[in-house]
Length: 252
Ligand code: SAH
Image 1 (cartoon, helix red, strand yellow):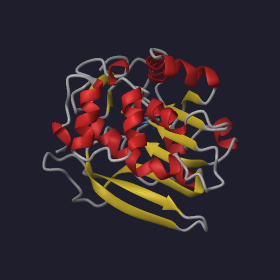
Image 2 (cartoon, rainbow, N blue to C red):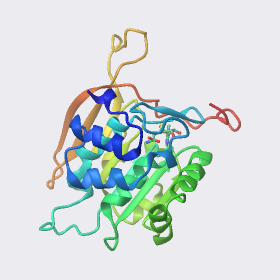
Image 3 (cartoon, rainbow, N blue to C red):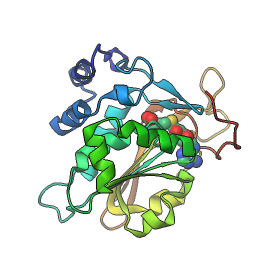
Image 4 (cartoon, rainbow, N blue to C red):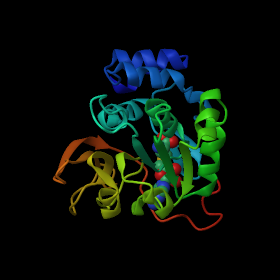
């Protein structure tokens, strides 16, 4: 069971994620072992649960990160026989920066590989950068220029400068979207995959406690541009919203 994957150490957490089939791929396992979640989660980092990180944001539960990475993996790490040596990954709602770091481990030091983390709260982009700078590998990713955190409204995709460098093979959205925002689809490569939690449609789309229900989806763009949406399962993410007014989101 997903929520039973807690451990006493990072290695134990990763072992338990593997044991419960949340992580099945050796490359994903290696990336999760290489990034200490304690650098990103202020409390109980090895619990398989979301944790508040301030600014009304949460670092998602480890099993959700694992599931997201497993779904995006074929686009983050292309097959050697494909002509796509330089994967480009976009992490919208980067928050703590943890998942951005995991993606950076997976793309490795391939020339031209890029991971862009976007958050609309500048203090969180600063936090993500500080968190990444806690480890040798994180500092190397930042220094290489392969990884960057930018303040922007992720509903519009990556900002112009990052988008101009090319479309993205994989786009992860870490907050629940009210709709499939067209900019995200437009910035997806063909082929490419978007992993996105979305609010359910319809007046009766509610959780038992009255909140709008959500499902996570993969949206694939095939080489010929054909779009295929697949609903995976119900989730509870914080919403992808307007940026809070200055001062409003300083504390959790
Ligand atoms: N992947 C992150 C999740 C953080 S919670 C992690 O695991 O640490 C969701 C994040 O989405 C928050 O950091 C919040 O600030 C951000 N967010 C919400 N609406 C946004 C928007 N419109 N554009 C960019 N980021 C947004």
